[in-house]
Amino acid sequence: MNVIQEIDDMLARNAVAFPEAKLTTFNEERLRQIKSYLTLPWGHFHVGVSEKRLPIYLAIRDEREYQDERWGKTASSDRPGNGERTLDEFALYIAGYADKLTGFCTEFADTNTKLHMVRQIAALCVWCMEQHGVAERNMTKTRTKNEITR
View 1 (cartoon, rainbow, N blue to C red):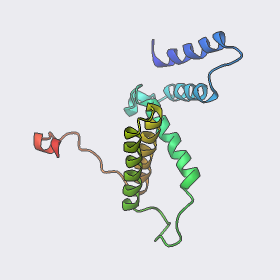
View 2: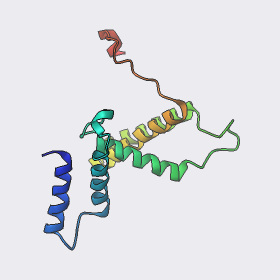
View 3: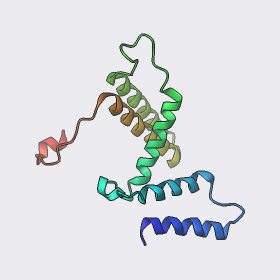
View 4: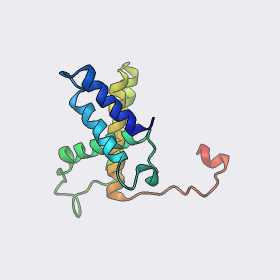
């Protein structure tokens, strides 16, 4: 069974088993988004997105949209140009959120709370690259053991 069939199956089982309750709106909508993405004419495999990674990328996309709604218009008037954040500022935000995540680990927070922070950190990294560009990984170069451990 492929992912699209599994999604259809989950939606159908839910409608039969719980006709009055349904999945939470979020989960049902998420399944429909994933299904619509998988059925695009160009297909997700052609752009290198595996079935396992697709929900992750969608969660990061949703977090980025939230960040834009919440923080996207907060450019400071004393920033040069269009008020975008500097690479150093993003590094500090990312480190700050990573510290919060580490704090949750010492407080024995639940897994969902920790994963919430991971999603926020990943989206901050995406936002940084949106503003400052991407340093592409050269996949053709063979790395030595010393390069891997650096």
